[in-house]
Image (cartoon, rainbow, N blue to C red):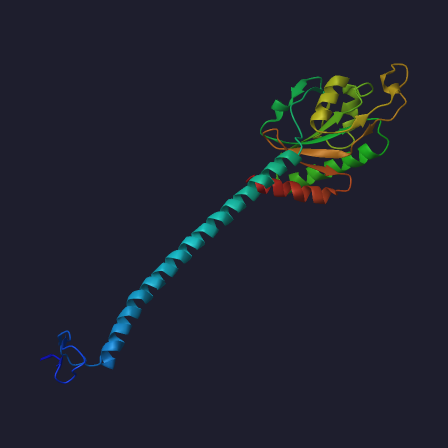
Length: 263
C-alpha cells in the first residue's frame, strides 16, 4: 500500500506567499515484523553456545596437551643434564686405583697381574719386620680367606702379600714369614722401583728412612698405609678395607661383590 502526502499552498489562500508544491518521498507501507519467538531464540543461542563452546574446549585441551608436552620435555632435559653432570663429577672425583705389576713371588718365579686373571686377588702391602700392625692385618686376611672357603667351598680369592721393604725382605724370609698365617698366602717382592710403581698404582703410601738405603744398617721401621685391596678377575680394583674393618665385615662385603657379579 502506498501512501503519499501532498501539500499545496495556493496563492489564493496565502496571498503573500508564492504557491509551492511540497511532495514527500513515497515509501512502501509495511507493518512491523512479528517478534521472534522465545523458543527460536533459545535454539539459536544453544547452537551458538554449542558451536563456540566445543571449539573452546577443543582449543583448551590442545593447549593443555602442548603445555604438558613442553614441560615434560624440559623436565626430562633437566634430568638428563643433572645425570650427565653427576656422572662427570663422579668420573672426575673418583681416583683410578690399581694397575699392572711385575714382581717375583716367594718361590723365585716372575709374576705379573696377568697371571691372576679369572681369580679375585686380596692384596696387602707390608714387611716382615713389622712389629704389630702387619701381623694383625695378615691374621685378619687369613680369617677372611677361611670364611670364604667355608661359605663357598671353592678357591675364590688368592691372598697376596707384597713387601714394601725389598732391602730386608728376601724371597726366603717372606716364604718363612707367611707360614705363620695361612698356607694359601702368596708373597711377592721386587726392586725398590718395582715396589714403588705398584704402590703408586694402588695409591698406597710407604716411606722408609734413609737408613733403609744404607746397606750397613738394617734396624728401621717402614711407615705405610694399612689397607688390603680386593681386585676382580679382570684385574680391576673393587674395594679396599682399612684397619677398622673386622674379618666378618670384610667377608660380608666381599660376598656382596661376588653376588653382584653373579659368582
